[in-house]
Image (cartoon, rainbow, N blue to C red; front, side, top):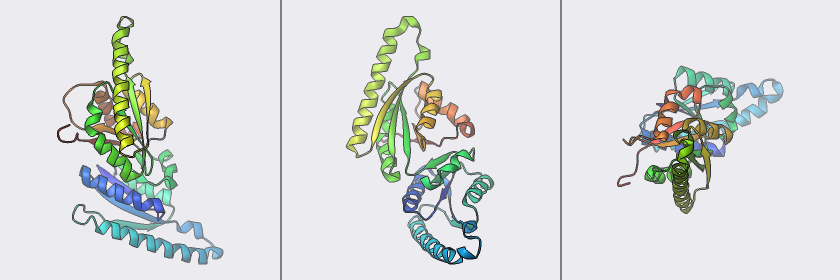
Length: 263
């Protein structure tokens, strides 16, 4: 996995940069940082003075970025790449040539999501945490809260009831699964809110991979978070494998985090 972090010089860019570097350090992903000066915006004589002022501000933002990178010298091998040109074109061509797995952007460049098959994470944005009737999500709740705080993101807790597994004669069993899923959602919600995270629950019924993608599109999700590892089979684990296998078609960043020790 390789992350492409786009530093655009906005106030959100510093948060994005720190978050992206921390995420790369935690997950062991390779990472590159790209900053593009939009020179085409200043074409023509009238834009000369505006370009000079904008370039001074751009260079100052690069110094801020380099200062952040320096704090990660002992944890990551990362460099800052700069370019002049159309930001969209440079970002897209870099993502393709470097074969990155996820592009991390501020909301300023949200439009990039419509132009590439590479998963795009918007920071700050909205994280999606799928849960089922088990307590597996509780094992990663601390990491989810950390992701939300570091990225300044909110969290949607998506409870999914796999109704396709139950026949008409199994209504009581289905109801029990639905109630257990609601219980998990409420426990997760309580912990996240206690951690100061803006979170809300949503309950859906259907195939988990379909419902996850539907929610990701409906709420413009920046990242879907799943527990990493585990041996117990589940519909959510199956959905995670499906989405991972169809990563380019799904076009939503996936983050697998290990359960906390003792969870």
